[in-house]
Image 1: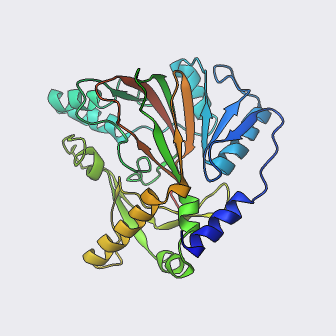
Image 2: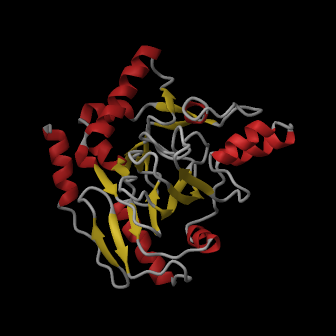
Length: 312
């Protein structure tokens, strides 16, 4: 590890941690992730409980709540405490396919997780799967002009033989571990994020009428909760940096993707158990669903919270 990265990690690990009175918070790794106990998400939360969860989310970015028995409405009620719920682009694409009579595309999108509730995305894999949602490092739906501020995945069925973990990485720390010269260079740049890269390129969903969402966001953003700077590019959606020549853009993005994916000090791993809900701050994390359990089954559902347009 170079000195720039070592200094950044030391500074984060030595930072004073918050105190909690209503919940128990146990970090998974010093850099990212925590287990939260003392909360029943099937019941409405008090304002004080929610305030402590918010503090923990700003501190750890990924929060894991185990042994939760949740209905769809319980799941969505918890999400709405953070804001209006987000609807995945799959739902809009499915509606367009149905309206045009394209039943084959509508069925494919339904298989991809878009059921009848536009506020829920189903996450499922079994012996018939040829790919799984979230395989590969990404930040959720950054192709949207206002990407989700957070997502909460509730897993009810886990592979019987193990596996199926989700890896997370801290994008605040990814920025902080870069050299001062690189930080300065990146802060003047933007990047294009396109939904066609994963949805058609990886999952084979036909391009809907009007195309997939595409948006331009700063490469370095300011987190509205913590005030810290965040590296905001990801392999899943980011396709180019318009201020650079194509070969320069490719080289820079590939370097940043490798920096995030290979620097293990940025990462944590959540191993799922049945009825676990994991909440992550989508503004300052990436995640990667590990598909190491074929042909076993894994099932859950995701609710995401609408965010604001990222700002430099």
